[in-house]
Image 1 (cartoon, rainbow, N blue to C red):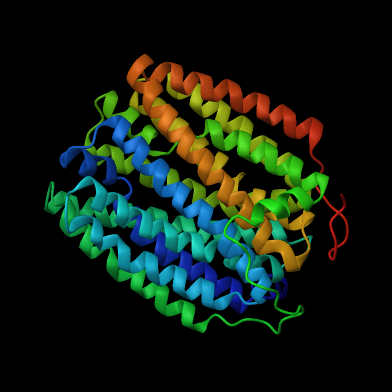
Image 2 (tube, rainbow, N blue to C red):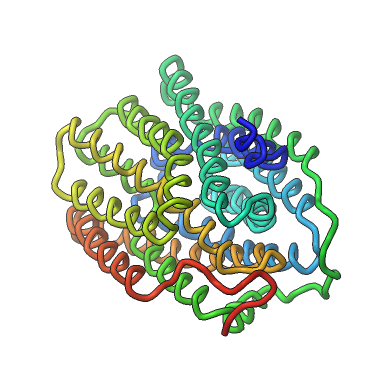
Length: 400
């Protein structure tokens, strides 16, 4: 028990609770998002473009605000303002059904994520030791994903009573979002160990990538390659609809996936600390390949259940592990920039991935889309095995 308290500090618990409430708000809407967007006239290609653009806005801002957090030697204000913007923007999608308005509201929500992500992950990394970092990020992902399971449960209960009332659901989602924003007021910065530097340019995180260590650049290259084949989870939900799954069952599958993810995230972090982050992430990529290959040929409900279980395992072995790996390769004073640069370029890749996925679905159908994604993910796993090492130089400088 003493070890657990020491590993999961007050800041780690606070950020975990903040993420729980924020994802509760976001995931109340996520399973209903394709249903709502289709109800106001979006096509499958339009949904892919909307999600890709929203993620690109978030990602590019993550690069800038991550570096701004490092240069200002502050974390808490970015966390606080980022979560507040996301909480306030969610209900705006229900105010007006015009495509540009919906895009703007969705982009504002994602901009809030862009403002907070680098600073939040730098806080988490600073609270951990190298031997506990994967578990700290795993715990945070578990709390985040527990909220992602509770949110759809609330949405399911609401839509059971009020079928098709999507706009009211968007308005209700503001409550847990505001609870998360209130909790961020208790997050405190540690005394700065560096002198604040001048404000960066919006794209100056690209300069950081060029000047960073070889191991970080190789890790970044592999993660971005995977982002290009990992389209929005909305396509998984649309695949279920393609096979005739009801709206209620669709949300049920998504809840199941998030519960598996939430329960597996901390054990996955333990495995990352014990086996090494490379072994954990490669295992996650191979699980992704199996899942997408399975979705390409499956049509039965029990097959979908098994695949969503494996998809939860993949998720637990991916995002938190990737950020712990970045923390192993990056000095603490550069962590927000390193995470922000990764998230910036990953979101540009998400724009391309979701747009191309929508086009591939429209032109060739879902089977080819999911089968090709599976094969490419397996090749990317091989790249990680051969080309990327797990630890960098001691904190304080990057090896060129």
